[in-house]
Amino acid sequence: MGTDTTIAIDVQKDDGRQSTCLSFRNITYQVKGSDGKSKQLLQDISGSFRSGRLAGILGPSGAGKSSLLNILSAFKTKNISGEVLVNGKLIKRQKYRREVTYTSQDVSMLGNITVVECLDFAAELKLPKSVSGMVKSKTVNDIVKLLGLQKCANNHVETISGGEKKRLSIGLELISNPKILFFDEPTSGLDIIAAMQVIAHLKELALSGRCVVCVIHQPSSSILQMFDDLMILSEGQCIYRGPLDELVATFKAGGFECPNYYNRADFALEVASLKHEGNLMSLIKKAKENPQSGAKGASESSEESDSLLVSTSSDDTESADVTDRQYPVSQWRQFLTLTKRTTLCTMRDMQLMKMRILAHLFVGLLIGVVFWDVGNDGSKVLSNASCLFFFLIFVFFANSMPLVMTFPLETAVFIRERMNNWYSLTAYFFSKLVADFPFLILGPTLFLASAYYMTAQPMELERMVMLWGICILTAWIAQLSGLLAGSSLPLELSVFCVPCSVIPMLIFCGFFVRFREMFDFLIPFTYIGYFRYSFEGAMQAVYGFDRANIPCEKFCYFGKVSKFMESFDMAENNFTMDVTGLLVWIFVLHVALFASLAIRLKRNQ
Image 1 (cartoon, rainbow, N blue to C red):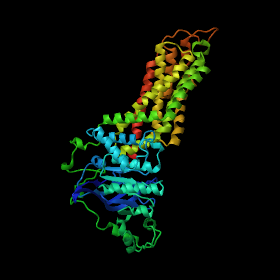
Image 2: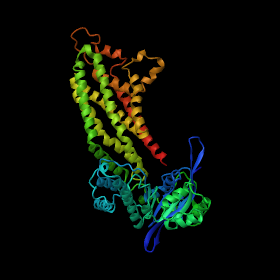
Image 3: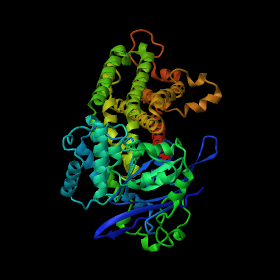
Image 4: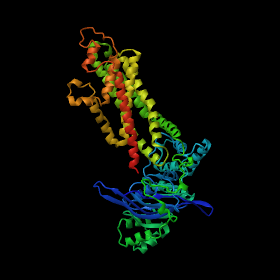
């Protein structure tokens, strides 16, 4: 089913104060199950939410609460029909996304920056360049005070409590002063005191003139009392929508009588779970009566589209106006801010930093001791080939596996921030690559500083630079492989898949099995694997370009360099082709990583 939902926002004057009313009508949402059959998650849901009132959506698991929230926040845009509007004023999806924020149940945040730094970076990304630094700083300080985060303001995010993290997640979205805020189970995982604090802050936001809607799961009586309006869902249908005070009377009229002193939320969930006898259809019918409607002609002016938000009125189309662009700051400024944040997080992760540096130094010394002075002895050229091979193996795994472990969390942060319109995929993609590049250079450099000299490789600047370049390119491929696995696979699967994916590359690199010894139909695969180019490039750097014969005390079978290269089926002076092959792989992995992140975003729509 195509998408024919339209969304609109209209800010009206209400007793001298601006108010926002978001209404929706006949929302229906279907998905295809694993068996290929369509499953209806929402059916003809209607209602409205107004600023100044805290609204809650209740229902048992599978009732469609989160699906409705995703649709109203414009996160979900596919397989939806219905209308979401306020008095019929249509605006574009990108403009609507600037007016709305959505905070999911599990909010992923970067743990190595402080609470204030987290808010500062959000301010840099979400507030226009025209806003001065002083105003941004005041905005951050006001949010810290509003949400009671003064005590943990300078603590790293990873050290603060669950309730403080929930409040911080609210603060991050308050930076841009949105008109409508959606929260998916904001009290999940919190004790009763922390949960009451979070809901109390949401109530204050509603009273300040914002439209605040949240999915709430099994609230206590004290928490439920803070809500003004409720919507209760049962198996994808609405059985109640209206003020909290009218809930019991409405249910009683439908044959469901709530016992005295019984938690109204618990009773509503029991009714929605079909645990009480009564006329449920009468509740559904009553919930559909007299839905809030927009201005006349709103639905007629909408047209079928793959976007949740469309505008067919030329009066509301502000594409030429810079104030209507999707992001408040330019992509260049997004790139600079994200690069600064990523670099700070990486440098703050001292445990990982120390481990990476120490590992490169230790393994460099270990290989130097094991392969001591093999590079200048004609009788040990095969051992030196093994030494160069281990250079590349270590560089690959040392630069891929740490990212496999750490990038899934960053990907979750990226998806949340990108879906809330903080920045573009392009800005994030390039900032991640640039921020990680200095550490990509540092590791192999420290490793070769000791291993190259101890293994007695030729002390010629050109050969040093060539081998260093091959190690850097190999580390670059490793970094991209780790990022790709971390962005597209679950952690437990990516840890397994990255090492497994390297095995075919090693088999066809020419070290274990010579090319002439393979079946003819396998030869083309040798040109696909990047380790062929890495190993061949390393061998060219050390033994190519007319290197003189290696000293040998006795008779050495491979005393002549050309004969040694021939034994590996390697033609001399082929270094340029090897570098080109590695650069092609780097380009392909860049494209694959960008596509992987784009697919992850699309899956959330």
